[in-house]
Length: 110
Length: 115
Figure: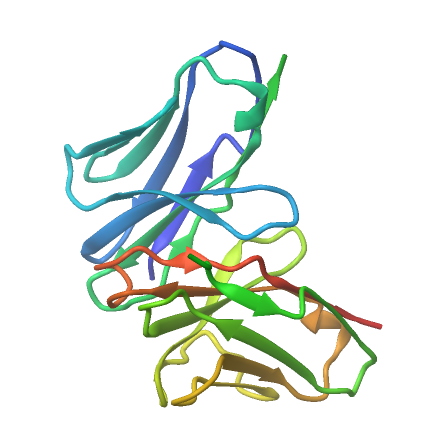
């Protein structure tokens, strides 16, 4: 059974204070790893897809990286509008559904 | 360029009633997925459908829950004889190709409250 664990569960940062969110996964053959952002009362918003170890993707202040066991979401100089829950999910070679981690709730204070 | 649409956004049902949740995928997407987010829990897969076919329903409760994606019209998630434990946010996602080979885009969700 696929497992995804995200840490920390919650993270408080000052505006401009860079940090990283961790996503550890156990999967029987990774087809893809996905990062989403979810604001309260809304659906998850797609951010990145990573398919193979060593791959990196960037978008504005966010950068996602992938190894054979984990993925990191690096946030550089965050702003208050980056406050949200960040979700990591995997799809394995046998299926088509996303298996989600519990998420990291990020709070950025001005 | 409409995204995934879900309605209603909020639904209140009394115990024993039926709940019908609708999902219209993004234009050009023929793969639909339903996920449930229980209070204080993560998102869990329920069912994966293509037009007129259920591909994977391994996450669906065995009783009271059913899903369809007809040739015409939206996908429907149906919950019969709702109980308090069904209270949750139900999200629909769609993709252009099979999940894993293609990003899944989520709708805003339907928040079901069972009183």
